[in-house]
Image 1 (cartoon, helix red, strand yellow):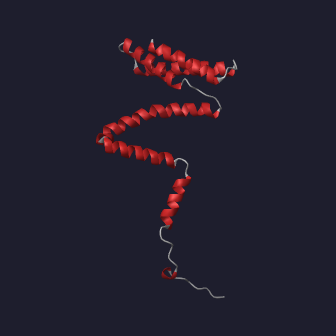
Image 2: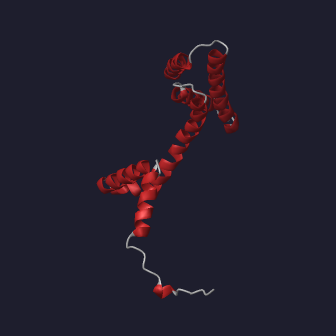
Image 3: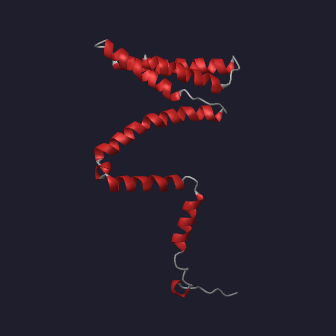
Amino acid sequence: MSTTLVSQSERPPAPAGTGARKLTERAFRIRESGIIVVLVLFVAVTASIQPRFLNITNIQFILVNTTVFALLALGETMVVISRSYDLSVGSVLGLSAYLSASLFGSHPGFPIPLAFLAGLGIGLGCGLANGIMVAAGRVPSLVVTLATLYISSAASTS
């Protein structure tokens, strides 16, 4: 029984571009890569049109504002997983922000954490009302949340 050792120099070379090809194929297999490519394209076009777009202050502003939408999307994910709809998310957010800011502005010296908790309570109350009407009242979530959307929009603009 004999074994032969093949040295590194005797191995056949790998075909050219194999590593890059595998990386490209892997990138195209991932579903979300299309979204990332389009995002990079939009950023490149916007930065070429307006060079101030890639300013540090602007990037911080974009990242801070996207956290609000990320938190809303996190809550909305739970609703979608349960096969329901919630059309009132944006208007309830607006109502909570408006009422907590007006509470803070109309009462000088009002503690900021209490104004924050008031805003959370308003959102929780609207969500609880929606949930009770959908679960106990057997009203479709589309109808309930559409009504909540109109009610909270009207309440925040009046």
